[in-house]
Length: 163
Image (cartoon, rainbow, N blue to C red; front, side, top):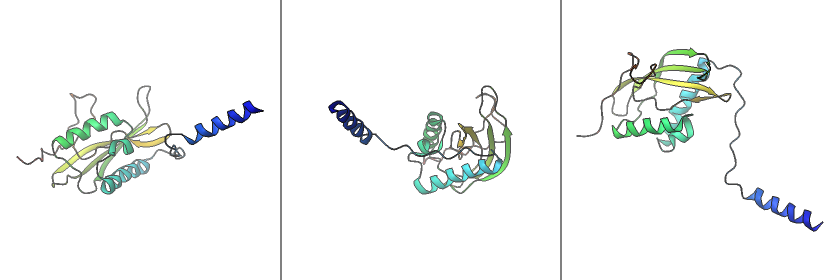
């Protein structure tokens, strides 16, 4: 009897000491459509408008490390998002052995200082949940087959830092 009371007390103490409650995951999407991908973009844009770029990668990007690198590069060039981008084109890419199902949105907008950009904004279906692959949409980056083969339709804004 004494052993079971101690065990219950230990379980209750450990249960009360969890670091942080997990956020409930939304149910998997029924269909991964262009509209779903555009809703992810809208959520990211709204999040930037509400909270800025602090904790941006942790909240919005599936690939947090890549997002952090892109965000650091954008910050180094004083590039901040401006107006809400528009989707100019959307391309669906089926899942393959090495890649997740993806909607690549081509977005166009202006940085905070008014420079035009055209960027790729990939949205992936990660564990049944649509998520921005990298999140950073205002730098004019595109996703070519490799780093030496960027797409020819992107437009990168110039360094906006004061000289």
